[in-house]
Image (cartoon, rainbow, N blue to C red; front, side, top):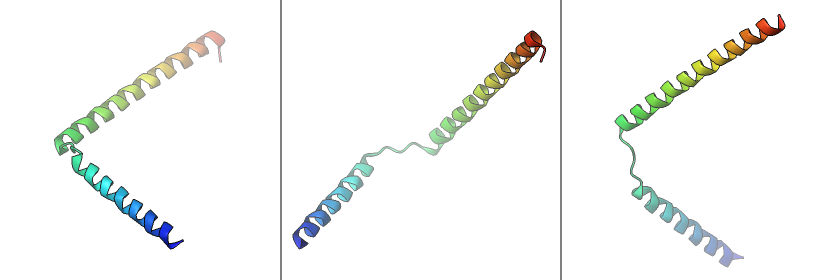
Length: 69
C-alpha cells in the first residue's frame, strides 16, 4: 500500500515538472496585442448584434404587415 503512494507521488511530481517546463515554452502576447484583439472582438460582437437586431425588426415588421397582427 505504501509503495503505491510513493509511485503516485512521484508521478504527480513528474506531471507538475512537465507542466512547468511547458509553461516556459509559451510565448505570451504583448499587452498591445491583447488590447487590439479585445477591441476587434468587441467591435465584431456589436456589429453582429446590430445585424441581428435589424433582421429581427425587419422580419417582425414583415410578418405584421402580412398577417395584420
